[in-house]
Image (cartoon, rainbow, N blue to C red; front, side, top):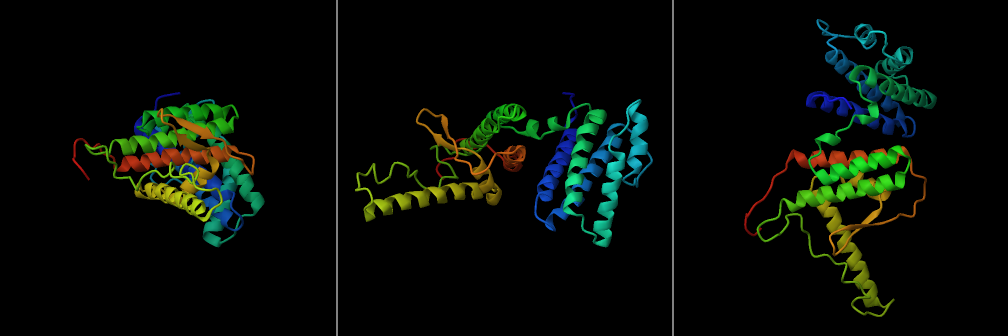
Length: 307
């Protein structure tokens, strides 16, 4: 993979993120899916703008129309040419019709545009930046090494089509991310500011030797589940992460159990639908977005005394 400077990497990563948002929007029911054409267009236009800067192709042009980018970039590519011009022109016309005249694109159009923009990025990213579009990621900006390494493993399994193994690695990546962030915030006594009550797993009715099915046993087990669920939700919310997006992540990834030896064990889910590449992409992106969110305000605590 060609080394790009950090600013170019960040901008490419934002473009890819916009593209994934557009893909998600395009899969929504009509008429909501129509919004995706605006996001697809924004992602493509940002890409073309970055491409002209990267190739020094846009000097003296402050107001470049969408289709003008092909004229500016093509001479910089030598024998090669920027791809998908005709298809992108059609999408641009549909975007203008929607944005300025309220003409909603059909479901068939949305599917065609999703394919067009996917091909646009896959064809043109290596032409301009000498890397594959699938290699564009915010991953290298993630600080937690364990998280980064597990995401690299996940991508490898994803590329080979093993989505279950990819999601197992992604769930580990998220667990390590939270553990790392919380561990560096503990005070001198080892107390965490993200501690919301004792773990209740050992307080089950069976371990308390209560009669199975009795009112007391039922009360203990229901209380245990409720407290465990609230502790988990409070931690995610207190970290500033999007809880609704986290719920989807949890529904897609296997359950993790932390063992006494300090390792995580997976419990495979009984799935009601076949996993897709988009499911894996969503979870992968969620971990990276969470990492960058936590890095917005990060600090280490050393010997700060009791909370």
